[in-house]
Length: 434
Image (cartoon, rainbow, N blue to C red; front, side, top):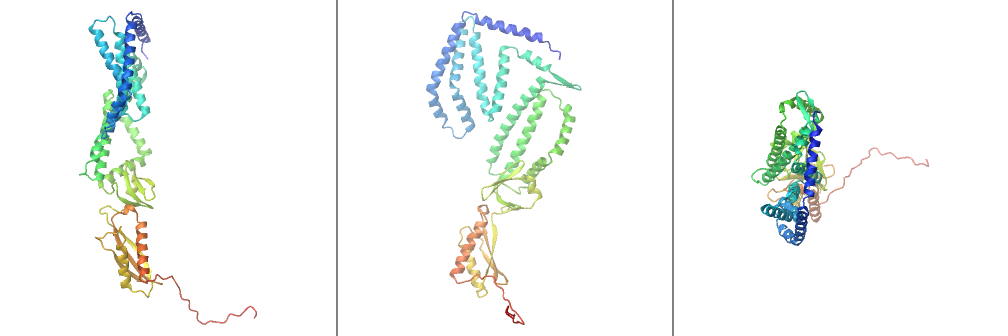
């Protein structure tokens, strides 16, 4: 490390001398009194005006992000007034040739910087990340205002190590982290905005909207990473070997993750599954709630939400009840006594299915006798519905109940299974007394 600490230590006395000179200035007390008076006036004014301004702001309904920023600004309304009045006071003192306006100028800069940082960082939803960003920005701007930022930067630049001809310093790492954070935050924000606009486009299919949104987000994130690394002066060719090794590691360690991600893109591109479809995967029956990069959310009739990996929809058999049409045909099997009239049973079954509200009218139910069973005449009743997401077992139960009522009302019996036992060459069984 070649950094000369004496240059930093030589700068600090100059700062302290500047502060001491300001403190001993005869106009200091008057400036401090002006600043304190302005703060009290700002605090009192904010308490009186904040409720009315917040009531007006609450009328904003269509832009929650803008409302959040405005409410955050109103929570710091006294500082808004303070910065405004201090700026006016500083301008007046400069115009009247006040001998020393350093204190009020520092108060203006620090209060303005703090206000801007707190308002801008409200766009970050994560509270911990928001505090880290605010603290880092505050420290940097404070160093710039005091005038020792170049010395600190030189010190951080001398802390590091070299890999061949490439040097990695603490300053470079800080620049990379800050630049990546800013560019990634900007890319995610822009990606979310564009994704919301795409989702509102009714001319595109749901699967295509999701696919375009995901491609836009991935492209923006990759672009942000490349821009951030290039912006801090890192030659991308230096990272070629390292990125190759990382790629091999990811290929072996994250096979399932990559497989699910690629499977998700395939599902979106071929439009085989879209939100709202009713599907069956294995023993899971439900409708698709959301398509994600790694999994698909399937909600069942009992309210359970299954997160099924995308790969399962590629490698396993999937039944999409509403892939090309919402119409779904269901079958109900039943049997009647041999004494019954098959023609009457067929008519009663069709009429019973038509009496169920969920059975569609444009596709008429049909009933066919399928075979002569061991104990009954076997029939199958087929009908169509348009809302499989509302359940299949319940509609089958409703049709069976309607069929039971129709058969019972017309005297058609549903037989019990029975067997006839014929014994030939019957012999007398001796009793126990013999």
